[in-house]
Image (cartoon, rainbow, N blue to C red):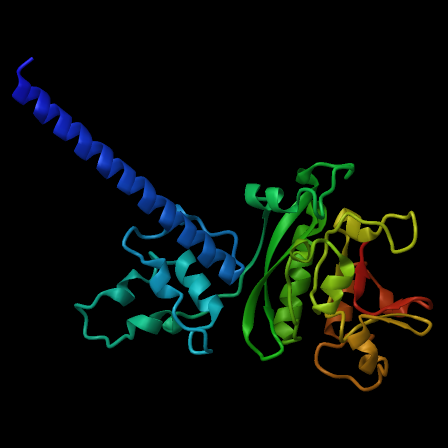
Length: 294
């Protein structure tokens, strides 16, 4: 073979290899940026393939102040193709690119779906233990809109038994529409499935395959049939023991403050009207943050 032809072929192969390595490195960098961004927003249901190729994720994660709340950015990613016209600079609209997502109206979300693969991986060995006597198909993954203590709309997640998934969505939609505030709504796996940590963080959660404290009896949480809401404002009380400790100022249930659950209020009605039992009616312990389905 002619030496010139060999040289040309070698050059082409070298260029191809260089471009390939560059693309792989760039793709890995993009994947890392995407993952970091999603984790920062605590959003785990975004399909990266739906994001426009020209969208620079790092440019969206710009502001830490309240001018661009995280949930607007979440909605932007989910519905990016829908709002693409907002970024058309040929129009006469004067949008600020640094914060144009703040112009997007927030739409409440209440959805149920089988556990996504990445959620299965996340909870396995944490809330879903090796001795859990049922499969992941028994559970459903909920995306729930709630109002926080500042009156802002937020997106949270819960895992409950699949058979009650739609019912739980109806309950939380009623709670959301009433304006009742919820402090936090994350999977308890973020707290290593340790109930005390979740309670102390004032986190509202559901599924956790565990036993009732200091017993050999499985909790209703173990079957995704119990939900805890605002543990600080609605503490667990047994004698002088109050959990979490920060809930002690809320032992006076006649002095109703935001986030507290009381007999007959909207949260109580939303659950009990569907057959749920409230721990706040028990004699000992009184578990004001706890609702369970039987």
